[in-house]
Length: 153
Image (cartoon, rainbow, N blue to C red; front, top):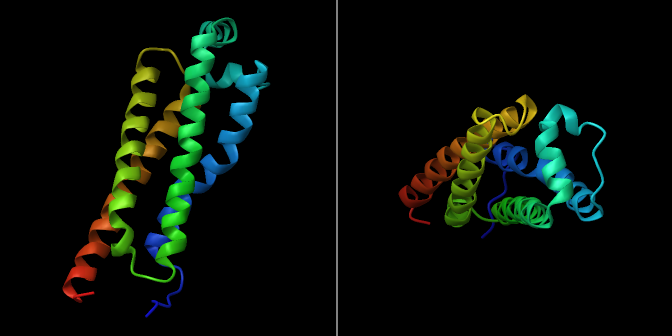
């Protein structure tokens, strides 16, 4: 039997962690594939990094891999959220935890690159956002899993 519920904190966290990437990623894949400069790139990366990507095919390849992976991680998370509409989120906690681990790694790498002066503050904020979302996802999945187990579902 399905679980009817209104928007919960878990719903909010799943959507918060997905929606920005579902919008940003496709635009950035196209931008990188077309090798076009973003009008706000100077606010996101240092000029040397931007020049490097525009001149280096392997850098563009890795950028498209990154943006594509982010899109599909967000899509997986959104699919987990949709599945959780009819069953307890504990039933999809393993998926949520895998995505959370990826978000934590990505957020950490974005912050690391900020400390190396490769990217600017907006990317560091994005990295911090990823880590916070990862921690919220982990908390939500574990809390809902324990409720799922306690109820014997």
